[in-house]
Image (cartoon, rainbow, N blue to C red; front, side, top):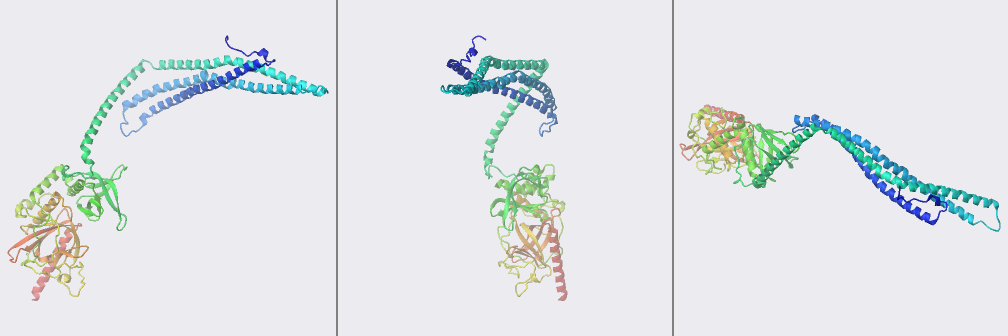
Length: 636
């Protein structure tokens, strides 16, 4: 090729400085070619590796698209249109994968092979000849140096012959090596152009072949399919944009509306308590005892499901039963280290749980909801409507007061005991009047605007008008089992009947009559309704001691007698037919010194499913007392 400088091979024997200088230029050019071709080789190898990776990735994509119909997605995994579309895509991509595999083979043959041959064969040949030439040149210089040191005075033919032969051999080797080296350097100028152009030509031809195969595969039918898919994608994108806009607007509205709800304890005047709920869900803290006096609190999600209270920890798939709240009792309790706590006790009293709400509103709503569920209102068709009607009717029927306006007046046994005492069970629930009650006027049972006492205000231990202290009536500690700590025994301690029950005082109110058990049922209804309406959930727990002389309410911790009811004054007692934990009795008291001024007070209690047993115990006590009185009369 014209214009290419060459090393003069005919001047290799002379080995002049000019020739060596020109050789240095060619060697520098060979080094530059080697560096450049190494970089170009790496770039082309990246193309080849990328093509191999693209071919493998395309094949894997086609395989995954074929397996789409076998996947089971939780949301929308059964879309037949999407499955068929992806199957068609899989076929096309599989064909493209075959084209990519052919392209990879062509790149290996037409692009990578020529440049690899130039790099591994031609450039390495130059380096090898350079090393051999350098060794031959050094050997020639050493032989000439020894030949130049031969002595003139005494000539040793043997030494002279050896040195001369050494010069001949080294010069011949250098000359031959130099000529081959010059030839390789001159040829490198041609091979450089070939090594640059041939891989590029192979690359372009492979790409053209690939595009031709792709053009044959992408026919008009496929173009129409791709156009339809593009239109579908645009429709989905527009639908997504519209949905995103709607969700963004919803987020903005919720942020504005929910801002007051971020406060853990919102203002109850702005967010009123819903008392008619029969379903509720939310996070509560549950107390778990870890020792005699130590406990821990675990935060869990609680929700009501029918008559059950369910709990679910974060991350659990489903909730588990925490407690059966049908016919349960619920009340607010005080915890030393927590606010807004309430206690749920099962219908049989064997299981209880203390929970903590986040706010006062949640605290009251949970108590009201569980109280409504306990009455089994949720079993009706419109539970919230019925709960609202029950609460509204109760609100109209009573005007509760947290305590009596005056303390109890002196309790004194009535002059005459009734010939018979009613002890029965109600046939209806507290949410509706019984058959007998429906025939009676409510005013004939309970006077309108009668105040309700929800707490035991003081023990019966003071001297009051019309009655002196009776033995055992003072505020001293009482042994509920009749054992005496002193030398003298009271009438109560002499009693042959001593039965102790755990009860919780719900309330008491004055009634207009004491001859019908419906009085007890109506009092139960009004007291429970008033408690629910006015959020009075606290109940005082006591020990009820039944003897042949009296009924005593005893403080379970201090053993101090809170109230004592003479047995002859208990003229009526009854338990609820459905909710066996509720029972009550009517006490006839004297309103002054005259026995004609009598009043009747109905006391309502909750027990641990022992209402009938307590009423049976009271009936037994009255029978024993009556029998003892008859024996005393006969003896006299």
